[in-house]
Amino acid sequence: MKKSTLLFWTAGLLAASASVQARQTPVEFSTPYPFDPPRYVCYRAPQEVTIDGNIDTPEWADVPWTSDFVDIEGTRRPVTPRHRCRAKLMWDDRYLYIAAEMIEPNLWATLTERESVIFQDNDFEVFLDVTGSTHHYMEFEVNALGTEWDLMLTRPYRDGGAPLNAWNMNGMRSAVKLYGTLNDPSDTDEKWTFEMAIPIHTLLEVRYGKRGIETGEQWRLNFSRVQWLLDVVDGAYVKRPNLPEDNWVWAPSGKISIHEPEYWGFLQFSTVTAGKGETPFVWNRNEEVKWALRQLYFRQREFRSSTGRWASTPKELKASDIEIEGLAFRPTVYVAGDSYRIVAPGFDGTSWYIDQQGYVGEGR
Image 1 (cartoon, rainbow, N blue to C red):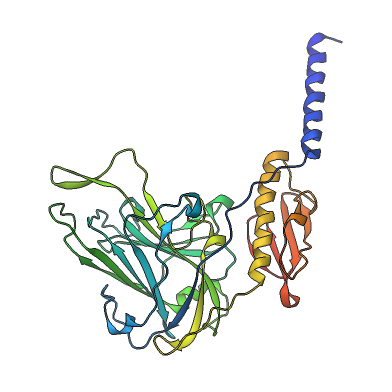
Image 2: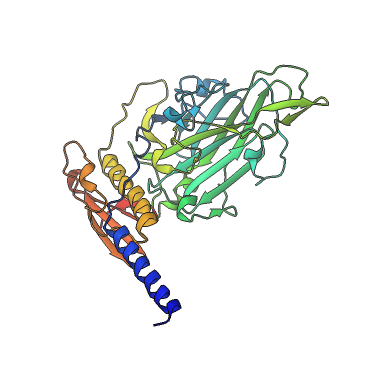
């Protein structure tokens, strides 16, 4: 046998041996950021709402605020945002109303064309996952000029999601109000506020056949405020060079990525009118099942990165490490070619699944 041929076969055997060893060696899985999304009860609007950016009005007076926004990395970067930001929501049979307040000493915005990449300016952003599946969620961004950008994501970018810029929040109205002077570094500003109304029928486009919102219904929701550090050059604001933006959010994901819908907060609808009573938030324990499946989804990604294939058994994913209080978490893994589905029983006789694209839903 020629020396070159011998070297070829030896290399092949070593590669095959390494592949087998990789398949047999247990994968060490990372620990995901803790699952502790904030929760918000959305009350009925007490009266007709005028969308003009002014939220210091009677219709908003008794609507509760969200908790103050935090850094997107959460406890992994425990710093308090430089400027306070918070939001509030209410609804009626026609619209979901959203308001926000951004404390801001330096009002600045440059983008004027709709569908611009608004987060290149300081901005406010809304994310809504109406189905709770982490797929087909809506994004809206606005700057202090009131320039809008709305789009739909087929699924998160990590799963090959595509932004659908041609999609619009049909019938949506928004406005901003400035407390100070825009793009004028010679003074100190106070804040800017934002107000929007999104038609319920537009939001329910992804819930086929559904016409209205049920009492107690829950969606996934997040807000983000992108903030750039500014300098003054020749009497004008300019971004400080070589520095990334800050990302302040309602529900942190533990990383600089807002497109992690499983970490977004929960929005629960109440039929009580704002200021006329309180509705407790009711935790759906099947969210714990969905989170357990999500952890297996994270592990599948790491397993495939390490071995070149999907794990085909719960044991390979160390599923026994994941516990749900009051429920035996016993998932089943189904692999077919380049696809997989993991199914697990839930509470109240339900069954839940997740697939290789991160879609989570009820049923088998």
